[in-house]
Length: 216
Image (tube, rainbow, N blue to C red; front, side):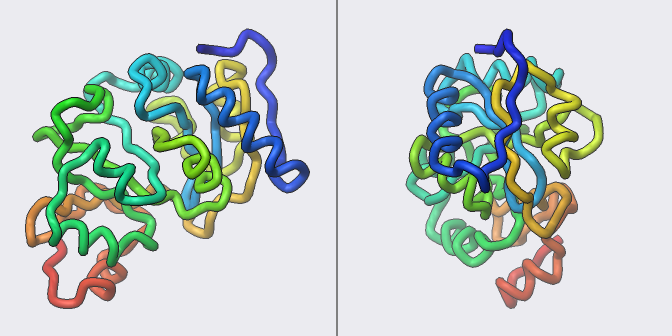
């Protein structure tokens, strides 16, 4: 689903509940919305909808081999896409308030667009009331930055709209969090945690939350 009409920017402060329901209706129909997170604006579709996931790659002009992350609000949602043991769950719980995207083992039955190198998938807690309201009332969403591949990060909603245009029917304007940069990608599959991409969460932040764990 893509829009043939003009894109709409909606300020969440003016009509919060109505805008959230409008966004959920677009998502139910397989369409995309742009929404704020604690870091940047994200391009969201139903993470359970294969056609919608394909649309994200199309809109962003993103290479097929670059997997898309998932936004969740609880670990039950994460288990629809990922496999993790008790130690990994404890790691997630200890770090969930930080701007981190967790890399874990992918379930064998999820869409290829959500599966990265070495049969992994990645998810994050978006830590933003708009994102959480969308997900709690709908389900897990994709959470890739709302920009064209390789272009400037969408710190403001106008940045996203300028790049993605009317193919996204709704841009929800709500102040992003204090971080203003990409999440840190953290591989938690082994006892030694590995930073795959440096981002808003610093190594010291991770080590402070998990004293005694090695982070490389």
